[in-house]
Length: 548
Image (cartoon, rainbow, N blue to C red; front, side, top):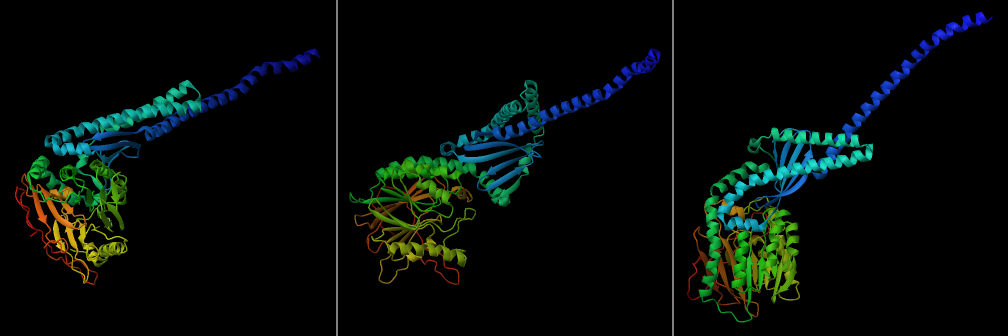
């Protein structure tokens, strides 16, 4: 029996190791597959964390601010399917440039215009050339700073993200290294495939879809800019001449309690206008400045910084909105400590009661046209309706209104007889006339100012720059207009300052000037104002001349 048992046990003992070996291989294969799967999962996780960290890092840190000439520019880098550059020019729109390859998108946002730098450019024509050369270096330095900042943000974000997920030094380091390699490779691809010639073939968006015309005008302006820069240099130099001229002028001798008002209009972002305003405010001892609108060109937020010079005048500044000024512009003016914004409202300043209303339109992309010229019936009714609203406000005022303010002279008609004087702008053409008299009511004088900013860039579209103009109004203690000085700087393309003296001989009837027909509501287009202004006389010592 022992032999039988040995026979039976023997074969089982011989085969047990083989069976155990065969049984172990499946476990080894499963373990191997499991290890490969785990390593693959780890690699995939590291790659995913690296990519996510790179994207978040670019979005979080891919932004720098830099100065490009007089502009404060915002450079932003974002991930994209294909590489290109967007030059954002608010509120005009944007230029799309096929500038490079790779999964990176560069946005260059031109922000606020630094007023001091702009004035410096105008004061020194040579600095314009220097600025054009330094702009390339400004952009290059800004892009280099943007790339370094982006790489640093990518590494930092990926390290934090990987450390939180893996809690393993090696995996965290690998994730950060991969993120850095991917980002640096993308930036390197963009730099290596850069196409500077793409600036010659941009794609326009927003209001810049009209770019063919804009570019045409810009080229024409650029061709004449050297001549214009020289003209501006002479204009600024002539501000000092205004001091000496006025000091030698036998000025109108106002009573001690005479109120002096400076009327300006249509600045259109020209910094030179502020220099002239400051000179006149100081030299003429101005009591209040009245602005009948169009401080800006497009009413955009970056342009709002232009109004900061109002606070430097240290005099009350009464303002109404023009058709180129937005609600943002009016709000920026209202924030100035000495400013008063009127919109179908009345204020009392320096003893004068002043009523004003803003232009009902906001048309920054429209060219300025003379009042009443080419107005559709709908627009004419809108503009005239503004004057009717203000006239109703004036007539309901508990105290007599001395001056009414409108931007477009086409709004002045309904104010005839409501007050003695209406001030306007808009046409960039100085005119003084009477409104058609209303039976039994006082006559109303309409004074339309030229452009204190020389029409801004629009002034460059003509052979000679548009003159900078403003007027000083003198009111007696009864708040009646006694005299006014029309000041023109650089008006003939020559280096000169003109000052015309007008004395109102009969304060009740007003100066002897033509009567201007004004637009009225009706089925046909209204006639345009046809008033003419008196001739310009160069400043020279001599007796004050009466109004012609």
